[in-house]
Length: 273
Image (tube, rainbow, N blue to C red; front, side, top):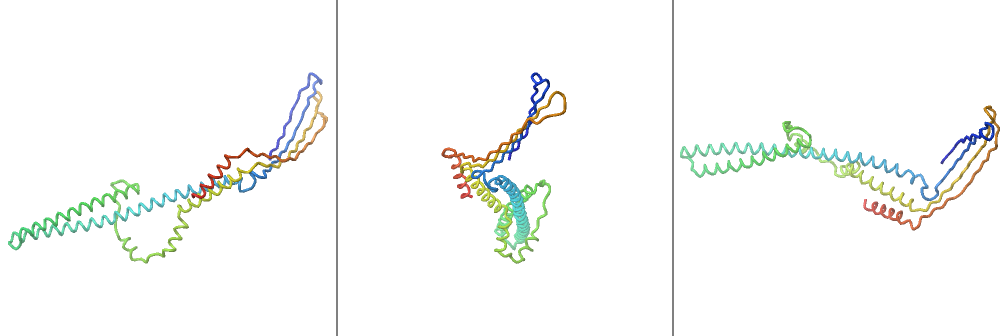
């Protein structure tokens, strides 16, 4: 829909002793596509794609948040397990040291042999090596947890297995319900659905662009001529002409290779998604 209006003033002072000619024109043009560009869905497809992009951006942000939460939770339980293992190995070292002290006292008292002392020293060295490994694993797990939570290395988290032990005593949830809930709320599934929807819109627009152009057009115009003499405010109507026209415009590009290639590419992307 296109509307135009304009006024033209012509100063004819040198020929008409100060008369001024004024022409006012109106024009209205209405064009309706009948093939290419026809339909509500085709014309609003870009708006729908923009909404899909906004939804996909929100889903991507949610997926990143959930992935961060999953990583933090996994790192927390890994660090908790490493702490428990370190505590167990630490108690094992204490027991091995007491065994070595006992074997040494028995040897000094004549109730034991040197072999018993050597065996106790070997056991102490073995459990001490396990404690070193458990401590290193614990420090690595805590560092990973602090990194994921954005905390300083000096801020040591509180780690315990109480919540894990409570969770282990609860009944397991229904696998089918958990699967359906996860699929309904998964941002990854929403991203996949948005990709398919965007692909369908691309195919729809590509199909429409591959059509020839056929437009129905209606034009209406009105032109009027008014004249005034000298500096007086009176004017006389010089006549008005009204014109209208209704026509069909047809345009068929030669071969339309680009449009057909875009349609094939859109179909391929949709099938891939």
